[in-house]
Amino acid sequence: MNNGDSHNENDDQEIELVRFFMGPKLLGQTRLVLGDTIVEHAESAGVNIPTNCTSGTCGTCMITLLSGDVPLPDVLPPGLDDYMVEQNARLGCIGIPVSDCEIDIRPPL
Ligand code: FES
Image 1 (cartoon, rainbow, N blue to C red):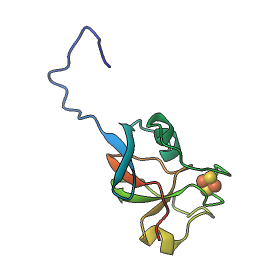
Image 2: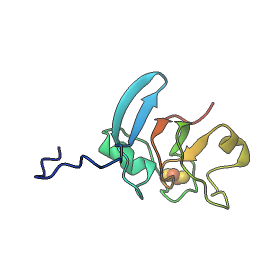
Image 3: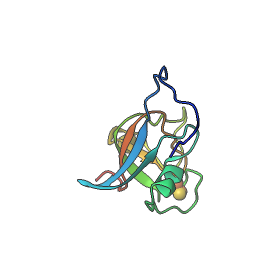
Image 4: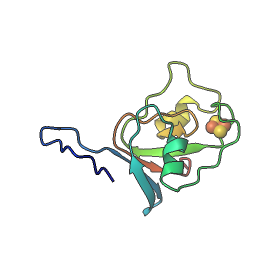
């Protein structure tokens, strides 16, 4: 919905999307906003990811990163451990996508 009076024919930037799934079902998608968390993207996409502490401690908001890049902090927060990270777990409340991402809103099995 960009009805500005200029068009960017030399703009190489592609629109990057964060897409939310439950299994094979696409629940919603939204444009990547750098600096916003996974949970904030989910809200924009009309998808609910349950949260509790919103500080990386409880693990309630754990999701599975199917593709894309959500960098981890150097020191894992209490809500994640190495095993869960190997299973592509991220925490929605503190994870910040930096590229196109596909996310299953459920934690890894
Ligand atoms: S809501 Fe507690 S770790 Fe995200």
